[in-house]
Length: 125
Image (tube, rainbow, N blue to C red):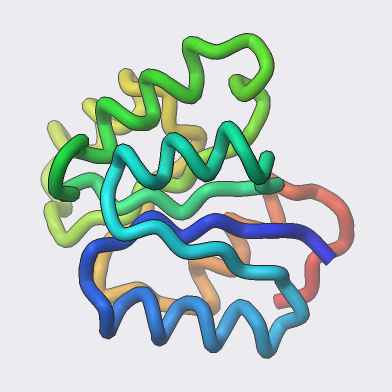
């Protein structure tokens, strides 16, 4: 099954997402800030990244820009996750290179639809 990197500084959000994704059969990797997330994308090459946008050390917008600027990483899909649901936040996420956008609190069924759409390999919801 696909490998998903969760870049999230909130421990409760990380735990909830990782447990639910693991139950769906995904291999889950975790990072707590944008710098660690970027390093893990480079070393682990996940199939998809769930990227919180408000992160310490390097925010999710910066991390996404770095990932998409690297020819070896740019095809890894990124779903931005944020509690900020303003249209400008959505636009900024797409401008940073994110492939999709979802709001917190995460509605897991909706998120799984986006994951399935980006992975496109029969991921069950």
